[in-house]
Length: 123
Image (cartoon, rainbow, N blue to C red):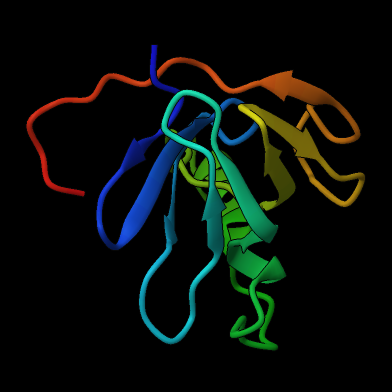
């Protein structure tokens, strides 16, 4: 079964740390090297995904998903489904090695990429 969906321009895989898809370019000026196949993908270099106050473009005022969700909680409202996160990993031979700077529970661990459904979309 495939661990990634591969197109001419992108590789997409499910990240069990982020509980969402990572889409990595493999064509164009800013691309990763892709080795292997969809069943045992390898990408190089590492993949670094940062959101919220961890993102390089974060504003210095400190307003991010952390502060938004804290404000929601104070008002008795449900939080947004988004979080400020860091996911830094290597994808090698069908496994994802999470580096220690990840902010999710899989930091420092290596796990097999889950199977991905190769459905009808083009990404």
